[in-house]
Length: 153
Image 1 (cartoon, rainbow, N blue to C red):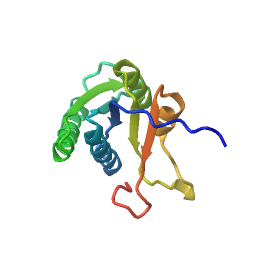
Image 2 (spheres, helix red, strand yellow; image 1 turned 60 degrees about the vertical axis):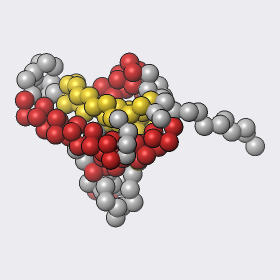
Image 3 (cartoon, rainbow, N blue to C red; image 1 turned 60 degrees about the horizontal axis):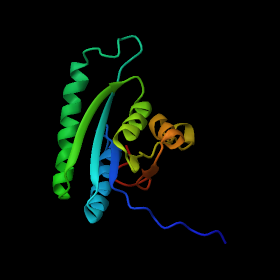
């Protein structure tokens, strides 16, 4: 039987948030765990900019919605007695931005909330979770409720 490595202490978590129940549930679970080991939690909202626009385009509507999402993320942290650092950025693809932020910030674990989607009868993970799983330089935790759970959208 192979020797199992002990779990490594996670000091920095990064949770991508997009306003979905799944992302908020992942953040809440992360805060609950982070409180136990006094870890840092960052909630990152990525505004995806269409290729038809310059990367620094004025995305005022998305920015305003993002502020509301990050305010909710900070509230989730307060509810769990954990300070959540809220950050927002613009990028072509959210997955790239999440991995880049994890590298830049020295993140130990990225926690991704995954909704339960079954287009055409087949489970679909989504672009961001697939990219993060394939490219993250750290641990990746997926958080998904059961199909009839509260975070199914």
